[in-house]
Image 1: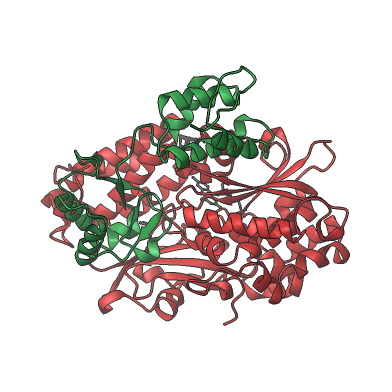
Image 2: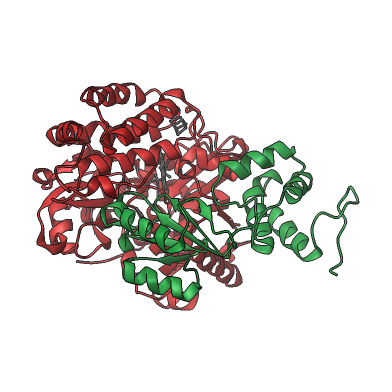
Length: 430
Length: 170
Ligand SMILES: Cc1cc2nc3c(=O)[nH]c(=O)nc-3n(C[C@H](O)[C@H](O)[C@H](O)COP(=O)(O)O)c2cc1C
Ligand code: SF4
Ligand code: FES
């Protein structure tokens, strides 16, 4: 199967500028000035069916066409490299191995959206990746690919690298903008959307690292070719981060729409110790869980939504038959309780209570009415808040007890896991 | 001693070398305030942590109220406001690491180091804390050492080796 981004993922290696150019790099960014006008380029990206690969799956070309170009204000491009969705680690590979692929994609997006200043927001824990990106940026400036009159054209582009400082919520695009303005990462009420009122009050394009990294290939080989690689309305390939109980965890670049079963068994090597599959989180921690009998599903934004879950960030976490679903949900909800920014009471209080109730259950002090209480809290958490973190928390919170009700009831009644007798001991003390 | 530069209020805020780094960074942003996360990172790189005095200096340097700097310091998890331990273990506790035995390894580390999660050893040699997913689930269970080095596919044996290397056993 053909690889696009991941052909750069050679262990231990970074493709620095000369090697990147030798492989045809920066030709797409250079050619775009002759091949397209800005609107033509946006139309091409629309036609490619490139989706936002950060999590929401919003069509990239469509997003760009919503950016007003006549406000008299500058338009900014912001790269979301906060990569905080648990189970997701693919942007790290792009930073590490193919920094110039991202920079080239940013140039293409800048041309399409008339952007002359862009920021890359990289999560603070990616220290080595930050250094790699910083060096690549210096290289690109030294070659005249960035700065004034890039490629000798009448087009300026400055790129600034910006480190986050440890906060999941800064991956939410408006939390990220607040953070980039030097504040706490409190998400903003929408509308207005960032496309219209974004960074420093100006129209702003925000895209994920991976979304932008596919642009070179779309320019090189055409939108129709790219669209055909994927499934209906879901163009191209994407990077699946596979972890948990598989034999070969890692990043796999595969077509959108590929059956989940193939990812697990054909690519990630199947289940460790040849155990049975129990469940899968298909799209990052915030996606609803799937049972082992639901893995025929095609992994694209629309098919997964139809199954009541989501493609999200393509973080696939695999659970074998020894997994205690109660502990797994406890760990999951502890994450949201910790990461809720606290602005909205349904989210702040809801994630807090849910974590406490689950804590009590895993300690063996659960009550049978706890289950319905969890589902009640869940029903007021989603849909009523400033950002989608609360909806993301509600997805596992609803789906785990729904799909594994008997296991939750048994745990509560007996005060311990029926799956792993040791689960109770293993749960850490907080 | 290094020469100190003066700012507009004729008060030395940072050493000349640090000041030059900060000035270069601030110049890239639309507003001075927008650079605060980077400014704090640079101060930490230089001094290890951000003391109260420096927090006030940052406020003055960026022309924002000290409370705004405090807010940023406390909202984000990567800034240290106290001297940090020589060797720091940040153990991931999120789902992929949980599934692959992370909880047990945390317990093991607590025993070996003789401290609990969230603590620093009395001699300041090492500290242990839990963190949420570090974007390295393919090497779960994992931890980050000294806020930068990723150590993954952890086992008890591997932890023993690591502890020998950094001389951290209790
Ligand atoms: C709580 C929360 C966390 C998010 N974290 C990330 C993240 O770490 N990286 C990312 O690219 N998008 C993240 N997103 C999605 C962004 O808000 C946004 O949709 C995305 O950056 C847009 O880029 P794309 O259209 O190219 O995907 C998050 C969303 C929410 C609600
Ligand atoms: S939903 Fe939660 S994380 Fe999002 S803004 Fe409200 S409190 Fe903050
Ligand atoms: S869950 Fe531990 S690194 Fe992702």
